[in-house]
Length: 309
Image (tube, rainbow, N blue to C red; front, side, top):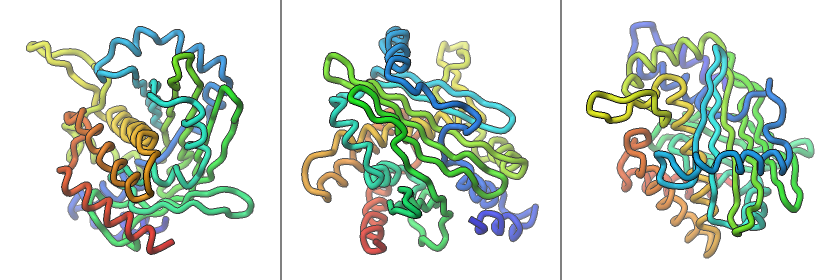
């Protein structure tokens, strides 16, 4: 974690801005729901109520599937929420997502996740996660976060899983994921993924620099108007950033659930192919590299992860 702070100290103000911004973004761009809020939909009935009240949004949206995305921004935090139907029975979803090791397989699909290992520390399940740039790099050059994993609620008709990293570098804090799920009568599952983080002054300044330079043309999914040609104008800025990453992690969960059969190697290959194809359905927001480059990078990271363990 000190590597993030040292990267800022070593770069002069006139050095390559992209390097400074990238160092900070890797420290703040990974997290879950803000700690100042209460448990998100902590009962099956409330999540079912959300499902019943959202039929129109599930049926009519820009994603071409039954899902929708919301995002919020404050002066100190960002939050993204995805609600979606997945084509898997609740029993399958619950069995898959109550395993901390499976969450490492999910998180590792993201471009910036270089390594993840589940272990037990002081009777708590934890995930040791290493984050890096969008290309292959040594683990010693990555940034590290420790997430506490817990199944907050597990009943026959409701699941809530949380990943928490309360402290981070450069004043970042409250890194969290919250995943909820309920069964539907048609055999599918309705899930809610919440993803957010809070940040301090150093990270906020770096984010402003990123959004004014490298990230100025990047957008999210919320439509914020239309052009004269009637093409949609998508939201940018911090909300665009949180929406892109929320979508990446949701698609990772979906890809993992779709690849549960077969050998470990076959499941891995299906996951990385399916995740990339799913991401490329939204190239305006999510395209970052070509398929061959992504697959080669993830295969190398997967092999390294098995060796390190």
